[in-house]
Length: 114
Length: 115
Image 1: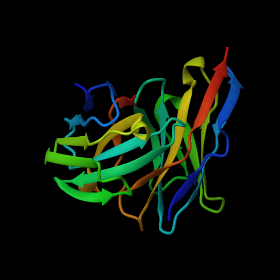
Image 2: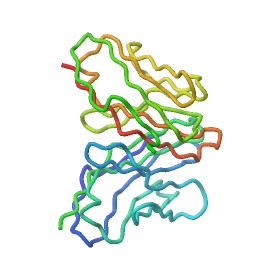
Image 3: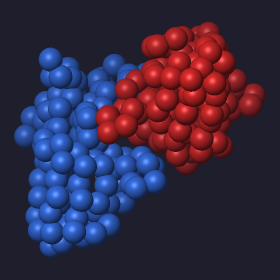
Image 4: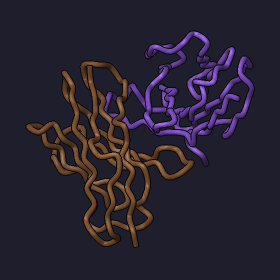
């Protein structure tokens, strides 16, 4: 069965500092990996995805993520965080051996302080 | 120009009632989903329909019944509501025929509170 772990419930960072949100996954087939962001009382917005190709994926709002097969990780990064990046971030995986089901991590709350 | 829309946005009801949540997508996608987000923000898939056919049915009480009248709509009917059904329900859609690389796009959510 596929699974996703986001080891940090919350990440605090000062505005302008680099932001990293961690994600590790477990699949039996090839992983398709996604990051979504949820602002308060809003739906999930797609940020970026890794399907194949370059391990460094660039997405919306200046975010990027690095796929590391040996460490089964897909950490989300932003070089310089903004206060407006404060939100709940979800990592998700789709396993080629498990149909089109998307399995989410538990979410990481990011708080960017001015 | 909303891509995935849900109605209602908020739903407050009494235990034992029956209620429906509607979802519509105008992206031309062939697959739609229902997810449940609990009070701890954990997201889990409930159902998925591809071209009006049920393709994912997770372990969900049979009080929950999805209905897809056409590719652009997926409604969720809940019978005999219980306190534990209180959650945020998200609808999503994707183009499955494009392969598993396709992104799922989410609606704004329906916040259900059962009293």
